[in-house]
Image 1: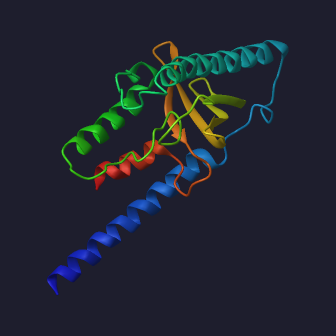
Image 2: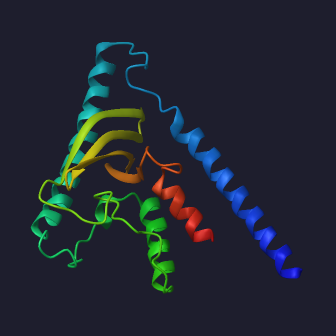
Image 3: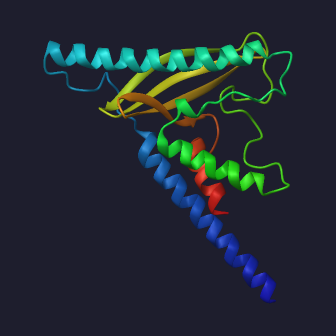
Length: 194
């Protein structure tokens, strides 16, 4: 009887945590303001906004050119794992990711990642590529890059949340709009709690 009460209490906590995480995510990501809906007051503002959008897009392209360059150089050796991607992530994302890696190293289970967040899959082939659809700037420090990845003959949607800190743009989250809980960062935080 005591075990049943504990199980019910744990399940209630999990349900509340998932609800809270979902509520927080939808408040943060569901209605991302668009550049098109912004009131542009003068040409100077338009030029500055376009400049930021161009810088964010270039930063994402540079990151993925380097990352996918590494992957494509190791198509025949997928077990090689000597790529250091820390330099591409915001401080907060890296902290959360490090906590997950640490938690998984203490476990004999599969762990949080059953896929690779860069390629949104487990395997990759020579057709691996990132295609940027649009960049939406939400404020001076946040942007969303709407994109898709082609890999192994298929295409998957990906929104890359970017954060401006220490004078540069960094990846702050990988958001998969085609799943129920799309924010990888929020999912990692929930994973660490449990």
